[in-house]
Length: 115
Length: 109
Image 1 (cartoon, helix red, strand yellow):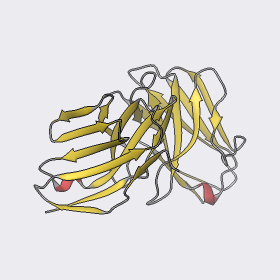
Image 2 (spheres, chains in turn cyan, yellow):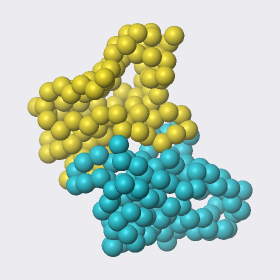
Image 3 (tube, chains in turn blue, orange):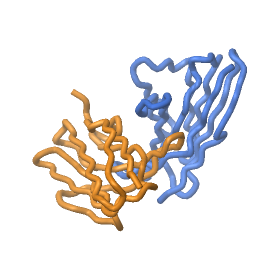
Image 4 (cartoon, chains in turn brown, cyan):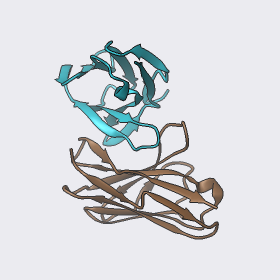
């Protein structure tokens, strides 16, 4: 299948700082990327849908000013967690859609710990 | 009503048996259907995609789609302990991905 690379895989940051997570589609162009958050033993929670060149669409309850998403090219989307707090500690996962209404492939995920 | 529903399990089967995972979806207009596997602490990986009614086989995995009844299932033949994971059903409706909450499968050696 197609390859989606997410970086970093693990990050520890201090409360109040910002963290940027990158999601790259390595061998295909992704017009749509998705960002998820997953707490331990819970299901995936969609945070936002990111389309290249346009503003992200956030799910209800997700603060767009706290979780900044940029999809500047067909192969790169970034999620910045601003002013991170311990409750933001979670597993963040991106996925990229290979084509309209086709498979989405996931990045490896980023485990964020805010101390 | 949730877009995609799965029995959370846990489902336990002995090694070598057939594991059957089921998923129902609410929107008749859904076009594309997928099964993902997620190991603990890892991100999901795509196992199967199915777009039309009937069965689709890939190795030990068979996906079954019945659009009239709005369900999609995954059969795992000759289950192995390495198949122990959470299996996520996903559906595309109106260009939006919807995931089920996942079914936890344990294959007992």
